[in-house]
Image (cartoon, rainbow, N blue to C red; front, side, top):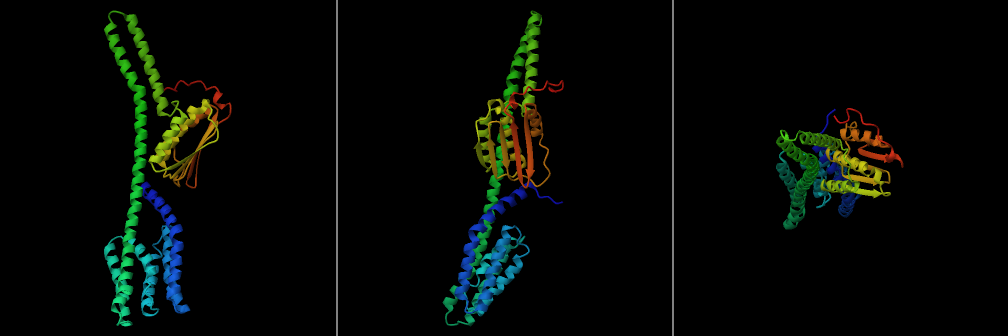
Length: 384
């Protein structure tokens, strides 16, 4: 099965959302304007029928555009609107029959792989040439014909096509900015992790260096003091290994309030709307674990999803993080959450992960006494 690159899929998602908004906002007034123009220009029912076909073709292209599939309809609709324009000029005496082309031509030109400028000029020339044919019917009103049938229709069609190019570029700029913000958010998270790692190991290494230097000086004078210094170095290194492992596996005790504020900042920087619901004060006994779940989930959303909305719900004994933009694919292996699931289970809680219909949900819940459940004894290989 063919898959699209993440950026392409994300771009289509954003453009589809914006196009849907455009459809809701613009199609009703465009339909009303088209109906008014048909009613104003048609002199009988069959003229109204033909002129209405041009408006209908334009609305069909708009509807297909919101579905991201104009390829099958844009050419037939262009032919219809291009045929309605000569009918309007030569039969219905309508200088507004180009209305359908104003909508269809920009979509037709936009989907061309090349020579878009030439196509714009050619279609503009067609509109002008058809409009100029009205001079055959009204040779005594050259200025009026040139204005109403040539200059205005041609200018409107060409300007509308140029605006379509500007609109597409606008979508691209929005998407590029969003991607840069997401990359920056992940970079900030990495810098924060590096800072935590430096806090753990930097001080330890400096102290170890000093103690070894002291032991070298005392090795021939006070062997008892040397042994004491080496025991302290050993204990210090063991503690640092344990802290580094906790950091690597998201087991370091965190503050939920700090993590919540950090998650909000990261999501907002990535252009993701975040909503926080508090259903009660969080039990202090599970505060750290819930903070770890929130941190790991935040990182996963930024790296693996194309989210636009995140909802965080806090209760006394649990947290739920739900986001959209999940890929329509099997649930990926998330190593950090897998490690957290075991730790949460050891503390009397349950960590669940669900993915369905573009929605991803991570939830950690503890029973009222779950946080007080004794931890299992450490295995011999726990510190490896």
